[in-house]
Image (cartoon, rainbow, N blue to C red; front, side, top):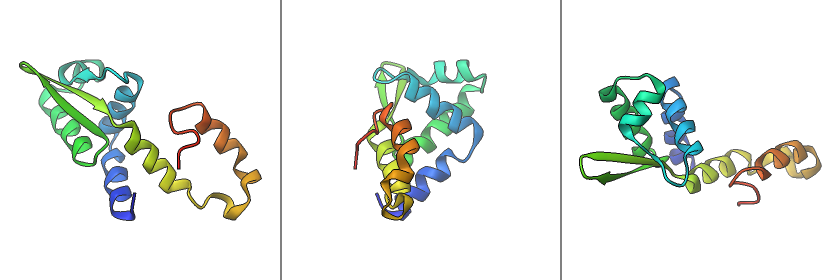
Length: 115
């Protein structure tokens, strides 16, 4: 991941409904959720949520798959891991013992140990 990609991802997440939607999609991996269900669970109008989901997809944080008349969205965990990796790549100036709490937290998710 480079700075331009990181900025696109962070910009997509820098809005409350999009951040909530992304976190909801992460919780529902690997199956994802239909866009209408995301809207319903977050109490956001469907057309507004469709716009938010499209922003997440353009940033590479989510993908869409059509199932008949419904569109299901999934979080892109590889992209999430790449973003987290980019943000912490130079963590603690080469002193890994200072990063122990962060590493422990990341170890509990899919990003633990990813480069």
